[in-house]
Length: 69
Image (tube, rainbow, N blue to C red; front, side, top):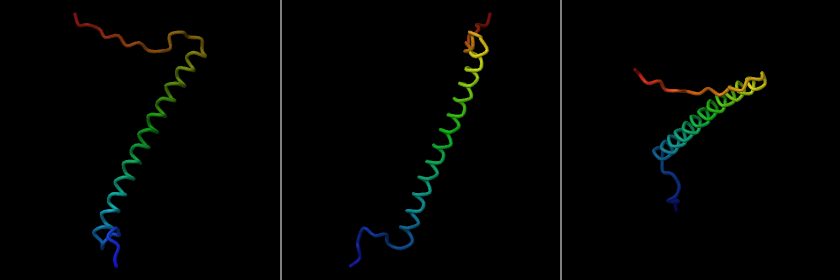
């Protein structure tokens, strides 16, 4: 007697492969995005550390919006 939980034919296996591929793609995009964010954070931290080590006190940039006259 066939098990109703088992996939039936190529349609089910194709659907499972598609779902797995989409899940892997989403995971890869999240992993790459997290890696890019981490590298940018490390570069900013390194720049701040180099600034502090050189003896400066105003290392963090302050953005000020100017009003048009």
